[in-house]
Image (tube, rainbow over all chains, first blue to last red):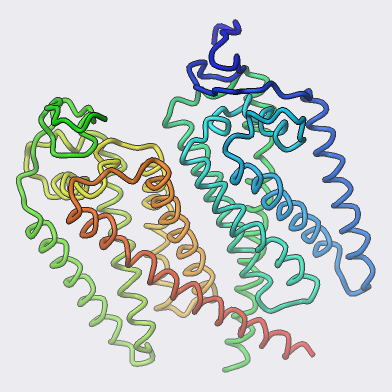
Length: 223
Length: 223
């Protein structure tokens, strides 16, 4: 917390400074650039999903919004988090590859990423392997009006909330001192994860309600 | 890591031997005793649930079996795992309290319990706080034929599977060397957790199917 830059192995900027990262190569991009590129692709993907989902006139706005969310979260899980899971030594990358730089940058908010913490890696592995493909399936399920649409969305959202729960609890229990500065703590560690609390919570409540109604309809029908 | 037998504080039996447990008091009970008491109470609770759930003639056998499972897993989450969560220093217990002895014994299969590993503690905290009460609610939901019965059971089961996933993955990533011997590894670390893979998996599939049927019924009705 002294704010001075101790040159450890590779001279990395992360906290704790004792983190051993031999062969560390500084990221070649700045925070505004990382955020801009991520925002640009998010906007592009969400816009495309919004436009294409509007073609069939039967699609309601709320369903189109949900499809946008599932495309966005699915691709984030698969590509961004998937890259992290399969690339233990992204911090050595010297090619300026965007995803390596993104994780070098995010690790300033939570060094457990660059430090390959077992808890963080486990959550990310489960998320990219299960929630990633399942989220894209949810897009199809909503578009095609599948009968498993709500329970699928509910299941992924419960998993996302569980993942975020583990993510923050393990950090707190281990001292909550993995951030290079207050700025990175709030901008990355807190801010970047808020969506995966708020949206899953809304979907859990929504799909729960719809499922109850479906079962009530079924009971009514039988009586 | 030299493999020599270092007598650490309290002379505990756990692996890694370097685990620092000042004030450790040996458990006063043996493996057969721990397992017998746990089995006895499980059998008692399951039998009582089976008997009482058989009173209303409308209750189907499969629903009664599910109620037995939810009572068992709910009380295990609340009492056994809840005790672990709120008792960081159970290894110092010298009163012969059963739950302290149970966790001293289980830690021979996975010393991350006695060592208060952040990942294990996070999973256990989420499990005892959320899955515990929710499991008992599931008993009521099944008994009362509530419309949220399936989505509730599905949600808890997804959480249980996620928890087991994190539990094993973090252990593997951290070297999978937390067991005093092969016996404890298989008897506690593997065997004791198998139920929380098999049963939740069955319930996830079952409730998914029922929910699909409920939504299909709803769609049919609307057409």
